[in-house]
Image 1 (cartoon, rainbow, N blue to C red):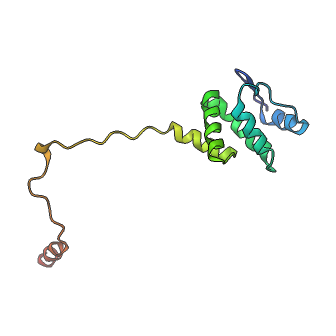
Image 2 (cartoon, one colour; image 1 turned 120 degrees about the vertical axis):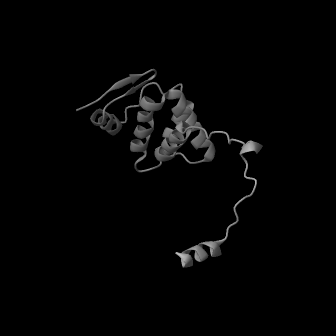
Image 3 (cartoon, rainbow, N blue to C red; image 1 turned 60 degrees about the vertical axis):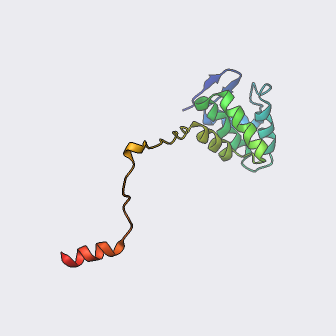
Length: 129
């Protein structure tokens, strides 16, 4: 069963059609405007599974959008690591929520006498019981 989707500027086909296209070396349509994607594709051609990695990157466009994938490709290229897994990791990291700001404790809620770490106290209680 093949699945196809149209994204502005890029046509993504299902796995069977994509494998056929890659085997015939047909270029993916619409990459003229995505300079980082073109550079990633060029770098991935050096790997044995470069086509498969590039398909992973292109399929991420469906979930994250073209701008996010382009930005992730740019970040991976700046780091000097162009691989499908690295780009997907960058995309996942960008979706993580930001850490919430730390909350300062008001003086009224602060302990007046802080507990002391005393392991001997536990031993003494245990002997009594």
